Length: 512
Ligand code: G4P
Image (cartoon, rainbow, N blue to C red; front, side, top):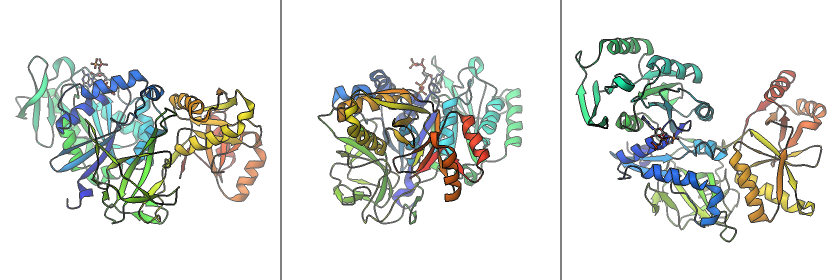
């Protein structure tokens, strides 16, 4: 633990709505001393949902970034918790945020197990081998058997699981959580049955016989925790707890501090950039725009990869090619935005700008590094864009190019037929698109159904590609970089083409 980077833990929480992400976030921040009032994150989360985020931001002028990144410190470790927007706001932002973390906590509901959104987000983590710590929440309520949950995680996600704790009963007979590392039970107290700090050594007297037997079986059956296997993304340690009643939260923070990887090296076109490299480098993984047309300022979120950033220093964004001074970077703390003076690898910096910074940009001192691997994801919703005023075609093209560069949408230009197609992974992106077209580009457009269901980037030899292209004119398009895309009518369509064209790959992601 010598360099500042080695003391950073940059992570996200992935979960299905209602599993308890907000509650857990609040408890992590409370334990980390970042907030002092219970309910604060919840209130903010609720208020944010009520405002329906993007759509109402334009009425406010301000840019709501407060909960995008939450930073807290404990025992010499700086934790950067990145918010992955939940259900309604589900979009590429959610996915891309996961490209900026070094590890994730997967929260699942003890009664519900793995739910669809958990699985989706997990797949993104797997793409980059992001290690995952599992937190089985709500053990104060009735839940499935512990074995059932463990086996589901193992089967559904194809991961080795290792229980690190065990609930002593659940629901009506919940008597606490046994932590394997310390062999102590955290006990519920008072009317609220919360964990208030009371721990007892585990003995034959305070663990019911049937549970003692389960634990014996589990310890023999699941093997030992292997930190290397976890860091490779092959194994997940599983903690049980109750965010609401504060069980398992301290163990979780300890686990992140102890096992979760510090900032990792990032792949670039010219090789791997180490967090210990002196040059300041980073990449933009998210841009949040202010929708008020009078205030075209945006916040670009940069993940620092190497070097020690100092306020006012000049960095060159790869897309711009000339240096800009970063005078008012923002570091995020739970309560306030604060002006950052310095930041270390693993930290996130908010950079106000007027549209110069784009998702996927590399920022560096020497303008030589180009980070790779910030993916585009296959859209799950495809729509045709129709103009209300056909003379605005040029403006529309510019807008679609801009917004796709910013990562708001993806755009596909079909080989045949004039109507452009936009693709998104979440419904909210479509609403954002329509209102930004009107507000910023004065283009009135409507979105119409398209015959396509999803898209795949097609890669292969020139010969194989041109053969494929000849046969599939009507469902071929180019993305904004001119790369070939197969527009598929269904998932079946994709596998059919894959079978017929074994020399081609049909990829659901494209790395930039
Ligand atoms: P989310 O961000 O993942 O969507 O979930 P959130 O934390 O908002 O939690 C969803 C619901 O589950 C909330 O109840 C919350 O209080 C409850 N919850 C979270 N963790 C636990 C836990 O460990 N045990 C129990 N029993 N409940 C838990 P709600 O009724 O929807 O909201 P609220 O009115 O209580 O705030």
